[in-house]
Length: 257
Image (cartoon, rainbow, N blue to C red; front, side, top):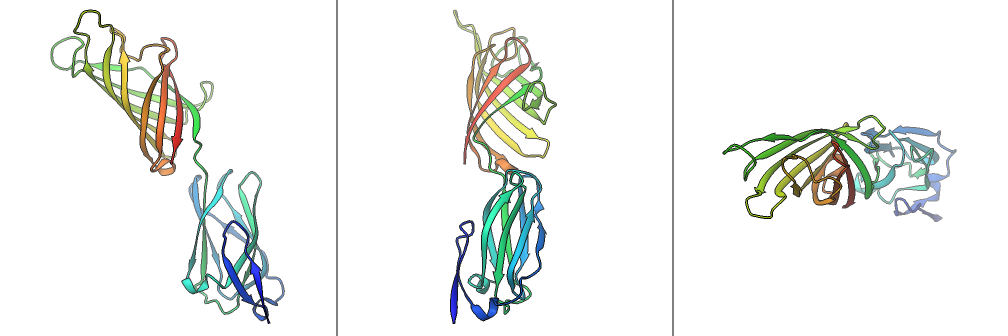
């Protein structure tokens, strides 16, 4: 006689297991650590020898994780096990489920679950740091002059920094015509978090000489063109606003995959 075990939604598998293979005493609980970073990790669950109503607990290296992928080896094991009741607790830092698997699975059989922390799509950071002028060519401000900055990155202005930003600007349209009051620059900036994740930004900005920084309180939108780590392949935009005449800048991100 055979009966079908319906899998929990997180894995969306379909398995039909022999009743004789699962009619065993409940297997002892298993605690599995998730190897990786605070934003992405992989938990490896052995399937060899089978399991009967075994409680699986995956301990994650942080909170707010989601189950995003699974891989089963060998391929023949895909229809020979089930997971029920997959759920998160303790703020998404622990994942639990119940495992059943046929006894005939080889010792090499493995289930690998990938957990990631979803990237927020809208958030605001703050940066603090002066802009430095580098005169190129003829003395004074003109086309080709460059500006650089290294700024501390904060999630809030009253909290310690969580990373650093690095940027360069080049004047492409100087004040050389009557009535002009601002110069235009190309702009390139990298936001680097302490965990080495980065966001890359490019675009244009304006300045009013002799000031070297952005025009105060004038928002400038630029493109997010990619990143690394948690932000690999990300796209979107960031609106940068200089807060008064200070060296503080508000960075309002809107991201998409």
